[in-house]
Image 1 (cartoon, rainbow, N blue to C red):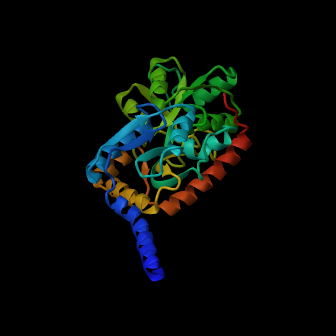
Image 2 (cartoon, rainbow, N blue to C red):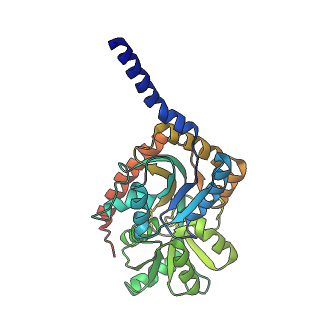
Image 3 (spheres, rainbow, N blue to C red):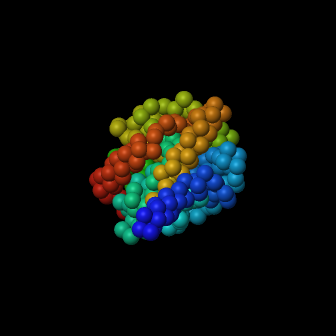
Length: 324
């Protein structure tokens, strides 16, 4: 009798252990939500729609893009951190939401490292300083001269406090000894429209968002924040070339899932998404947007993210960056 009980117990334990494997074999069995913590029209949204369409086809399901913007990506990221760790919630994480905000917001509702597991790093890209087509400023030197002549009069938009656009502005002011008025929006889409319309003097924005508007002539590019000029914008000088030595800001985009998502699901998503990103048409599309595609493993992304958190904590402290 005792032996029979032991056998039944062993069989029950084995069945319990087998259940997650069986469930993963069925994954996905329903639509997947790809949460974008910024409004439509920004870099994270554009990439989510590019990737989501192909990912849905490869997984045989629907990828639902859900925009939850605000607070530099913090609102949507907090929502994602509370989602079930079952592979049905993806988050478009950025340098803002997953590296910068933790040093800016005293009561952030999530931990950028502990609350999530990285799936992929999509890629990195510099930001570019733009002005409206009717702006009197033709170069970065024009902007700096005007800012020094009349401190705190030039306005600069951003996708929100704590974003790479905001930090690029703060660093420019810190390194050049000038002062600007930061005008935060709830995303790049509405912000760049006001730059185009002339309601705001200028803006740092990612090459993904600004590129099409530069090509159409709606805005003028004055400088890029990379160490070297971009292949996609060879005539646009770097900020360092334009009189601010050592200046460099590089934004990045990734995909995360809530912490405690089973490793097999993360591995499956990583494999599927990297396969999509490595397709020739996607590689060309990313490069045309000014992005440098990434090939990092999940472990490498985790190490990279931790280094970014530490780096930006030091930068924010040194530049004495304050939230508006």
